[in-house]
Image 1 (cartoon, helix red, strand yellow):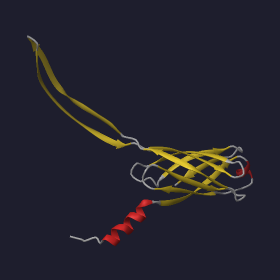
Image 2 (image 1 turned 180 degrees about the vertical axis):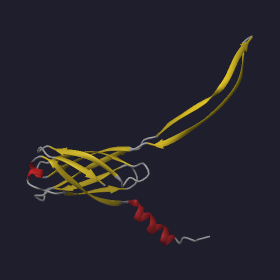
Image 3 (image 1 turned 90 degrees about the vertical axis):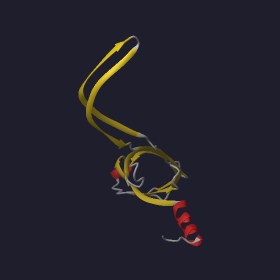
Image 4 (image 1 turned 180 degrees about the horizontal axis):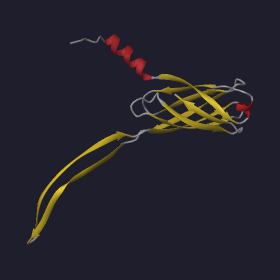
Length: 155
């Protein structure tokens, strides 16, 4: 059995407490895309709560900061059964004789999120995204700002 020292445990907790995930927004239409801007650096601060800080740096140096929120979903089940059976009732009692064979499978839902960030020069960004329930650092989405730009995000 492996022993964990108190110092190692505190170190692990500090690492898990907050992580910055770096990604990029790609302008797909609007003034930035027309100027040939390839990407904008973005950072999501993740602490496991589903909500945190988002930061996006615009090409002119404007830093947009705000919040993101990711809604964790449940699960979705689908299945089928086949077989034969009969039931009958007498004097208020129901009797059943049936057999069924089948299968079902459960698929975890995707997690949907939104981020809104405001910059010091008046830019307001809105991002809508979907992440994997198994790994919140994998996802994709789209966004727009109040200056006519549209974005794609993949992380």
